[in-house]
Image (cartoon, rainbow, N blue to C red):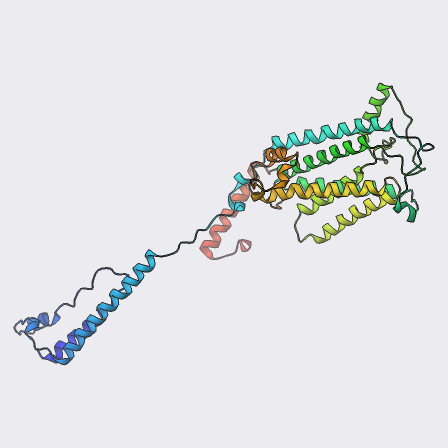
Length: 397
């Protein structure tokens, strides 16, 4: 066979020499197809080495060696990159760990509810005791108050306060019922209510202020009549301590304002556990809360210091508790001074198994019947199959 044909055969093999860069074995040298072609044409077979090397064959050999060296270089580089590759650790956020990070633990919610219920009952007892120590208006006139100096009393203003408070508490109860993690949020609410009213018991017992205005009519003192005091406690509990129900006839529970606590705490929980896009709802509740607190002072039912202390005690307790609950690094931090509060062991008991921030999610308070859930599940499966097979959207089915 002519040398040109041999060269042509070698050139035909060259494209098959370019192997993938991930290959570790050296490429197989091209088969001497010219011998097979020579036998097929009836020519005697000769070894390739017996053929004279022309300049073209020398160039082909140099190109083969160059491809081989290039392949080896690429393979070594890729192997080095794989060996020294930096792996990125993708950690699963706590929100995606499932229900284990937010267990309901309704029994803890029940304990917090009993705690709040006991403190509210104890508050009525303290109010009944303090009422017997309130000095008479003729002996101890109302203390001077700067707010009262600039604004005269409006009698119906306190009714606005109690109506606003009832609306806010009602809105919060409805919202709480539809929350998905109502057990965790409920025990937080019960614990804060109980703690704030316990603080109130301490302050109004150790310092008894005179009535803030001459208009206030207090129930007569019973002194040693224990039976009469018990009936007063029961009447105060049944009426919720509201003037609208006629149960708020006792004086002495001024420092600090319980109405301010409920108005402020209801708004804080409503805003914290509702969607951020519901700004109109937040503003509406804020107006109810702020106007209700202002009407307490307009009605001269509490001193200004009662309202100020009630606001600060409520907001700071709410913010401190939720800072500890939502910032998990603080729980075990050695320099966390919030852990020195007396309620820190109670907090650890209530929040021990809550490993992430409670998301704002809503759900039906009661699960639908099993037959309805199965029917809905079958419909979703059929829609998914139709979408996969026919490329249709579920709504089109």
